[in-house]
Length: 232
Ligand code: AP5
Image 1 (cartoon, rainbow, N blue to C red):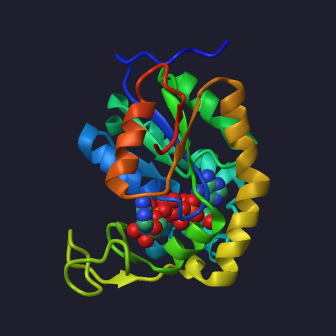
Image 2: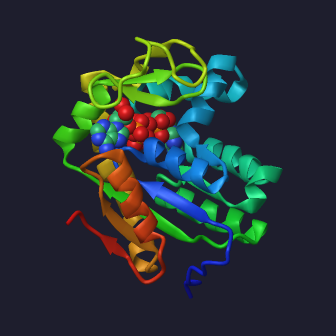
Image 3: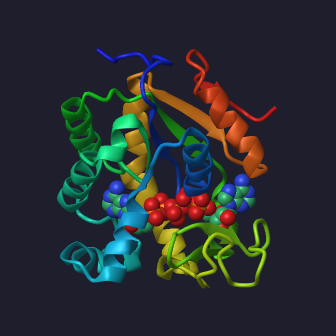
């Protein structure tokens, strides 16, 4: 039976939604506000690719093509990450789980850690908005923070506000790869949202609008009993 979210539990949140919907942007806002880590599979994998680790070498071709990295690699990577000390006070998962098999692996990892899931949040926008957001995204190659050339430009051109490192366009943000990632999302990750909905653990949020407004909707969704937050 599903364990209901209790406000006193450490926050354990899953962020779901199509590529470019703003999971990382919202995840960072909430993680900073709550003082808990944001665990982004994309950021961890890109770090591994940059460092040339065995995981990075195995993952890079899948990522560049907009394909999912095999489940076993991801599940092992996340089981290791969740066992680290900073996860004890709660965490936000961005980009995991992304397949139904990964949901099952996460169930086991959370059970092992004694950390019940608080909620899965599904961010929703139309595909045209996703394409607009990804086409204009620039990311810090060091800390991963995302900017947008039009909606959220950095203070200094092509430099990260946080650490001054160069901003780059991600390999998988080319137009043809964006469309492929959307197909993969429909096929592999929409069923993940269905899993959480069937367990009564899903809140759907309209992700169109200013990031600060969406952050407020996310906070409302974290109020137990409010499971469907739409823009007014
Ligand atoms: P990952 O990095 O997770 O990519 P993604 O899910 O496709 O998500 P994105 O990072 O592209 O977007 P986002 O929703 O975080 O949006 P953001 O906040 O940046 O994964 C990359 C790859 O790694 C995968 O393709 C796969 O190969 C592999 N991988 C990762 N996890 C895996 C897993 N579990 N299993 C297997 N493989 C895995 O925002 C986007 C843009 O919009 C930014 O420019 C931002 O400034 C702007 N923006 C944000 N909010 C707003 C707003 N409200 N209004 C206007 N613009 C906005």
